[in-house]
Image 1 (cartoon, rainbow, N blue to C red):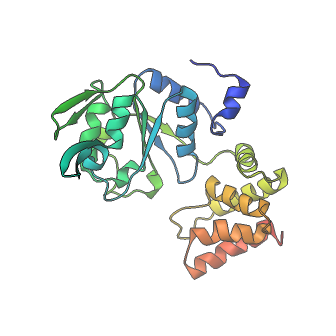
Image 2: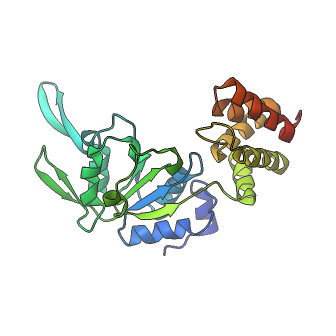
Image 3: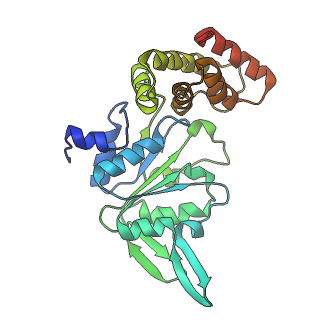
Amino acid sequence: MEMHSARQLQQLPFYAPQGEECRLFEQAHASRLPLLIKGPTGCGKTRLVEHMAARLGRPLITVSCHDDLSAADLVGRHLIQGGDTRWCDGPLTRAVRDGAICYLDEVVEARKDTTVVLHPLADDRRQLAIERTGELLQAAPGFMLVISYNPGYQNLLKGLKPSTRQRFVALGLDYPAPDIERAIVASESGCSAEVAAQLVRLAQALRRLTEQDLEETASTRLLVMAARLHVAGLALLPACRAAIVDALTDEADTGAALHEVLRAVIGDA
């Protein structure tokens, strides 16, 4: 395992480990294994990948997946420039050629044809077939495929097939423990320890709500946003209202219930 000095670690994108996830990431990379990271929105999945790419000294190519993302978007396509047709690599192909880490965020949002492309890269072959050019690329040393998704947000129509899931080493993340989350909020925003503690207490209270019909709950990301608004000069109550509570719902009744929790935890701060 590569060792880093304290100064080197300070220069990396900030990430507060919750457990052994950094070591698991390193070992997966060293073993040429693809990695699946699953966890709720805003819990630190993307930051972990950014931190580890820098820590491993590998270039990082990130793709935010969406409903219209196809295999061609990942692999590449022919483009017409100046009357000539030329091939243009997609992000996945660039990562394979360059030995980069390719991170597909919320991979289940992409079209189903993308998994056909990923399978040969996610097993011992580590190959990418480009049908339109006839190339069969062998992944360069250092290449790693990382995908993520939010299990709590998926349904039967949007999930990973067992044939895909079982090609990956799986890493589950959740919202950090309170002491770690307080440290993250303070470090990422520059707020005081007292404010960070208040925000984490608010998040815990909101996450305990089960009777409200919320697709998502208060994430660490939202806490950081509220803290930054507060550090910029906004009072804590309206900062939390704008960055956390009003960001979670558009429903009037649900919003009123969340505002009650906000006032109970934050008061008139």
